[in-house]
Length: 297
Ligand code: HMG
Ligand code: MG
Image 1: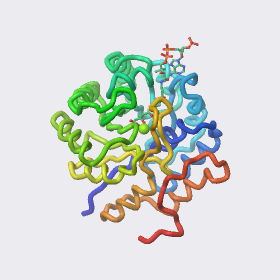
Image 2: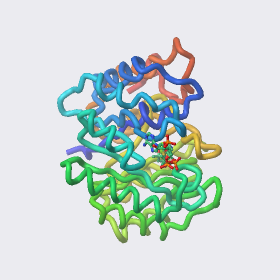
Image 3: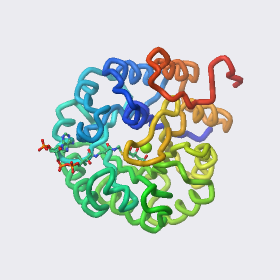
Image 4: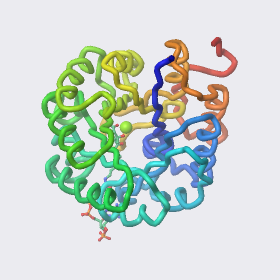
């Protein structure tokens, strides 16, 4: 049997949070519908962060209350604190994602608090969410390098991973927020993190700043990790991570996995067409390499 890879799409959240213009709510909803129709089964659909910090995501409630959910599709949302959680829980959600930073400098810029204080706040959120019967996913950002502090020690990422698993996260997504990782630094990171976590409890979240996304991914897959985060058309980035660019593009990921003989059950043509939703609005960076007319699979 072919190996299975779980694709976790972050475009509607990570992708659109970084656009300079506010993407209209109906376009966000249409994008989520098209991703589900293409066969994507995990779609991070919104965040409930402070609208003063990230205005682009201020319509999370409208998005979550108006999407038509496809059975079998998971629609997680990103939550920074209890205040965000209290709003999100009114929107029929089943999974949340919490996101401590892997470095002090980025924690201050992105969350306005230290790494330790961030973990404390996220623990409160996770405890409540688990009590409410939700699934909790954890991200760690800046797992390889930080735009403010420089290189990040893999040991500190292993420690945060351990804490997130103890809190009750079913999975920890390792985020190379600014895309500085290489296959070598990813290997060094994973050797350390796999001392405290099983590969089935980890996910890889690469930003593609230096075009290393796919080779980093291949390095990670060799350790047995089976969940990969990606973003439609390679949109994405974090407004508080200087120099951050788009995520690994879902179209490129699916094409890459086809080449490895991995069955994703995703219709690549429909997926590419989903990315074209942005064409008339000129709001997206179209980083994906694969175009329907050039498909050769
Ligand atoms: P703060 O300003 O320190 O918050 O922000 P505060 O608790 O002091 O509250 C200040 C005001 O904000 C209060 O209102 C709160 O009610 C309000 P006031 O009394 O002044 O009227 N407030 C909120 N309003 C709505 N929703 C909320 C909320 N929280 C507070 N949830 C905070 C702290 C954490 C909220 C802020 O820093 C924040 O929202 N940060 C999130 C930034 C963000 O979204 N970054 C992008 C996502 S992370 C990412 O992309 C990386 C990832 O993809 C992985 C990777 O790539 O590595 C996940
Ligand atoms: Mg990200």
